[in-house]
Length: 245
Image (cartoon, rainbow, N blue to C red):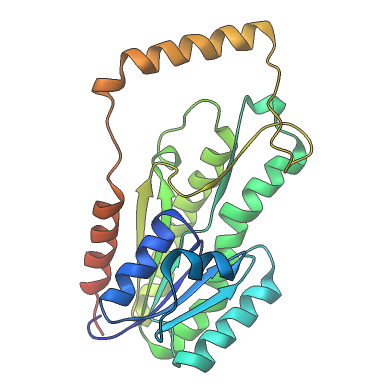
């Protein structure tokens, strides 16, 4: 896929999402940048004649469909979809409320499905396209205190691997990229879901958390580090540029 393209990016108000918006614009592409608050997008990346900033909640299929229609009205196609929107709750699994668990899955997993479901018919009709989903290392190997975030990413990994052969005959390429939680909306466990309340741990839990913290601090110099934002951006652009027009 070469030449000027239309990028549709979710979670574009912060982190790697806004970084990709800026990079795509600098590369001469048209960009549809979506976030819950479109003002956050323009505040982060500024105004641009090739930028369409839209308020969109990935958990609302009707809002997603509306954003896709606006993208087509403005630019006529969608060549690259970046599934980047995400959030995560921290805490011991049993301290997470059912509402928090569902909210985590709704954004990270079902939200990604909503957007891709709306965009794929466009790409199938074009006989071209590239779907990039930003996953996480914990979608491959789990980690403590973010069990539901990890579960949502494991789900994304399996889903992406499964749709790849489905869409390939239509000239659509898929790519997964992994990150360490940068630019993801973070909230601690504890009801209500959006209260951000610190959970009071049981005695045994607190001791476990402290021990894990000491282990992480001791091993910090030897831990494998995730790729930088610049490297992730470079990998995404290289993957997209290698696909046919």
